[in-house]
Length: 361
Image (cartoon, rainbow, N blue to C red; front, side, top):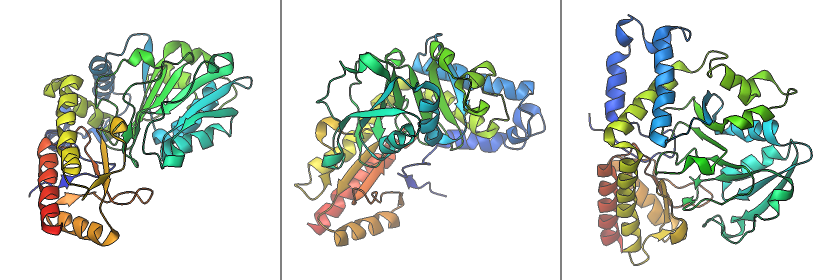
């Protein structure tokens, strides 16, 4: 069976090699006579999988020993609450830069726990860029943390350079973690739902400075304390064992590709093919994101009207392209070219876009 050209915004494509290995090991993992899904989370066989995933993440992202890697359930949406619950003290302010729907949700949750301040926003321009005109100098006076969303799936924008923050910098990297090399030490906390670049849904990776764990207050529920997860190696309760197993396989695949540097090189090629099809279309396709804010992961564009857009999507579906419909906030189309989306899928899409333009101009 031919594989679909999967451009879903998430959950999205997984490497075929990973799926085939999981299929092979599904009923008999490591000669246990059991699936990973059947193993005790306290067993040596599962413990090896769990720790392998942590070690690979540390290796591939160059995470220093001064950070803890946690596996938490609830998706990035739970992190919107856990972050202020753990770190927004009553005499402090949480600062946010608003760049899309997910940062808006994070701000909404933070307001439930304390004082927040949005110091920059792209909302008035329908989030078509990453704001640059803001000052962080005043945040040192009372700032608990500065929160950013590094990539915006709906609008197709991405931070190219991160703020030099005088207060701890927190980042939701759910849709672009490991798409390019970063300096982890610029951040005090990074979190990411797995279902875009790391594996299937069900697990959230949290990378957190160990000294932050000392700030966790006593008066919040046990399962919502970062230090509890850290003290128990993310095994305080039964973790999503199969999702973590799949995470470990995806990380092994990234290592086999040559690491994050090689993944970034491929991602840039993938994005270039599609952006070139937009830029060379004489306005037939119009990108939503400003050029200096364009995302490697989510490429958003519109056509001249709803009728031609529907025709584009219908013909694309006939040719095996999946997930190209744009979000209602932007309309048009969106191609999500996450790490596991093959280069061939992106070249095929660019070719289809050229063919469709020529046939419908």
